[in-house]
Image (cartoon, rainbow, N blue to C red):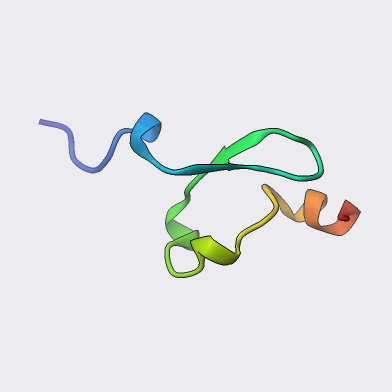
Length: 47
């Protein structure tokens, strides 16, 4: 029996820079509401 949650069942958002969807990650567990960009590169390119 598999452990955890299937990737398709995780919440996702769309990056405002590259317009690609990105899924929830364990390291974003505490601050998922404040995550805006999919990567550091998109955050630096930004706005």
